Image (cartoon, rainbow, N blue to C red; front, side):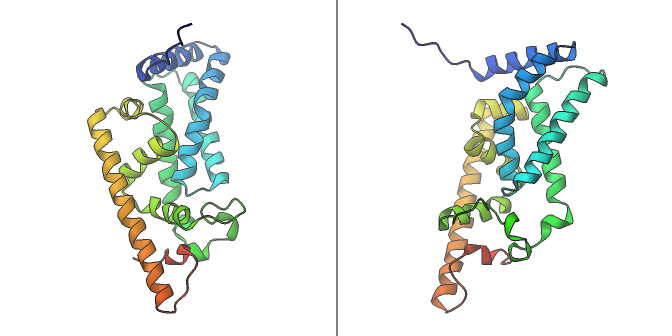
Length: 211
């Protein structure tokens, strides 16, 4: 029996458009299908963008879907890409939250429950380094890397969501990986220098206030 082929990103986008248009016409079940299809990966996107703050990611997701629901009552034109619409909404809300003063505290000033990756249990040195390095990436690079590496979207899907060419998305993802590696190398190098010089060691988190 021939295995059923997985839908292409373009076919999935067409399905999204059909679901969202049915929702705009009054079909609430269509909205729930769209919601269930995209919530897990959009949540991961928000979670990584917000440095693993689960409560804030949940709040952002609630706001994203409330705004999407209001789209029907506001009688707006159907979006060309419904997924692109909710992604842009999530992105803007995350950026606004990050710019809020309470997210400019240093690592050591944060309460323990808001430490990056705080899920109970120790992170490896590399996990801790990646968690601290991600927020240091340029915003556009970080967005593509999170969408691809953490949320699991293919480059073609990301290109369609952001209305850019696949080539530019691939280039941005490559640059993001290079820059992430450079930042991680610097963080680990500073930690090793601290340990060799008798300074505080054991947690890269202590480097958060370094330039």
